[in-house]
Structures are given as structure tokens and as C-alpha cells.
Image (cartoon, rainbow, N blue to C red; front, side, top):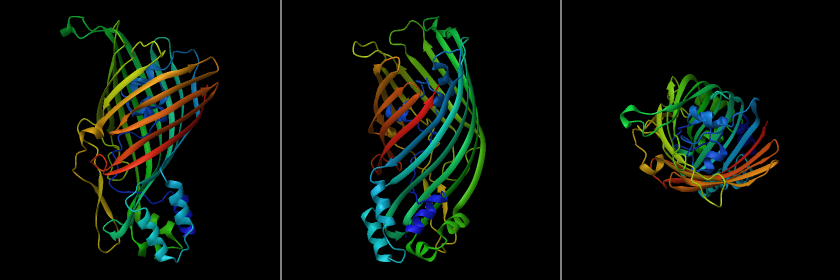
Length: 401
């Protein structure tokens, strides 16, 4: 059994779960997830392009290029390590042990995500910002099933993907809708990103026979039967409108993501999504920079869960998008971020929020050139809140200069 587990991880074909949560964005930044995932109207980071490309205009202006290296993020579900230990301690011919361990974790979701985003950005003094980035990610998830039904004893969805991102944003000052008689003067930022993504994905419902019959060549079996290779090009367009001379600096945002050819029929497909958001920066005595934001993601319910069409011959599983809408709380993001410490050589922020009906929290620390982040949030698998909750923990390490 140890050989089976190690082979599947090495080949990026590890076991994952079905009824996937919505995949609105390609990258989940640790700080943004600490703020409940609310980022359409916040910006200020190179990773803002993943929710609204106009957000890079809010990076600090500088005469120098801003470089983000080794931006490595690792996230894992609660109890993932104990589940891996239990399965890897089984012998390859211990069928009953496999069934007993599967029963122990039946219905619980497990996920592991490792990603790296490296970028070079520049915010010029004439309110133009540019960013070039490279993303590489491995997305592993699984849910064991006690009984080997339509989904097998181990239902899997997995992908490995990489992409190139070219982004730019321009701010136009003194903009006001004419029908409001200049009562809402503000600054309008327009952002655009061009991206290319290549991915290999795996979807399967493995039963005990699949595992035991292919114990010596499971990686080949998964690759030959379940690997799907896709690539696509898409454009993202974003808007930010900042009201001038208004109390608490209100900002509203709109992003239109994945306009192009990334809606392939496989796990990890990036469907077109429209997202709206708003943020304010209240003036409070106990914080130098409190920011509160609210998003409503995927206005037109483009994201769909994946369900398996059971094939009794077991020659090839087929997964398709189910025409099932997500409930309201699955679309809602609420977050807040506040500066705790701000020194020349060290700064720290605390983030908190509500993501898909559950709490999030995070610490974001900068020590000279080193960035460290720790975040927890809960994914909701399926269309209904609480159907399959998956509490996850993120650690991020990066070098910025």
C-alpha cells in the first residue's frame, strides 16, 4: 500500500474528491483568504490579478521594480497527515485493512495544494501599473467512501497546472458619471490580464478492485485511463472606482474573468465569471489601516459541481458539470484586515472574515525582505453549505524586494 500511495503522489495523480467546490479563481492568496476571500475591490498586491486585474494599481508607487520570489503556498485539510499515515502503514494485500481505514475516514474531505507564484511588477508615478507572473500549482483532493458505490471507495479529482500572466492597469482621475451631476467624482482604474494555462487533470472513482489489481502499476493505470490534457488562453478585465474626498475611501469593483478558451470539460476548468465587490477604509483610533470588504462572486452561476456518470464496465469514468446552482452564502465573501505592527524592518497584519458561511483568520508578517503568512478557512464542497465541510490551513513563504 505504501508503494501505491507514493506512486500516486509522485505522478500528480493522487486521490481526490467529487462534488468539487467552485473554482472561481486560479490562485488563493493566503492574505486574501484570511480576509474571507473578499478581494474584488481591495487590490494592492501582485496576486490581485487573480480576482481583479485593476487591483495592481493599488500597489505602492515606486521608482523600482517590485519582485516577488519563491511565493510558495502550501495548504492542507484538517487531519490530512493522520489519514496519510494510516493508509501508508497498510500492506498492499491487506484488503480488510484498506476497507476499515476507508470506513474510518468515509465522507471526510481531504485536500493538499502546493503552488508558487513568482512575479515582477511596477507601479509608475503616472498611475500605470504592470505585472508579469508565472504560476505553478498542484491541486490534490480526496474523499473516501465507506461503500463502493457509483463513486468507488475513493473518489478523486486532481490537477497539475501552470500558467503565464501579463497584466496592466491604468488609473483615470476626476471621473464622474454625468447623470449624477458630478456628485460622485472619483478615480476609475481599468485593468486587463492576458493568461495562458496548461493543465493535466484526473477524475476517477476507484473501487477496491482497481487498487488491488493495479497495485504494481497504479500510476500508469491512472495516467492511461484518467489523464486529461488541456490548455487555454483567456483575458480578464477589471474596474475599480474610488470616490474622491469621501469619508472612509469607498471603492467599488467589477471583474470579468476567463473570457476565452479555458472552459474545457474537465476538473479545474475556468468558466467565465462576473464578480462585484466594495471596500471601505474606516478611520478608527486603534488601527492605522483598517479595511473592510464585501464581494459577491460568480453573478451568473457559471461555476458547476462535477458529478460522475457511472460506467458499469469500469473502462472509463465520465464526469460532467451538473446544472445545480450554489446557494447564496457560497457566493458571499466578507473580510477585514488591520495593521497590528508597522516598523521600518517589521510589519504585521491580522485578517478575518466569512468565506462561504464559515470563519477565516490569518496573520501576515513582513520581516525586511521575507514574507510569512498563516491562514485558515473552510471550503464547502457541493452546492449546499455544510454538505461536505473541509477546514484548511495555509502557510505561505516569500521573498520580496
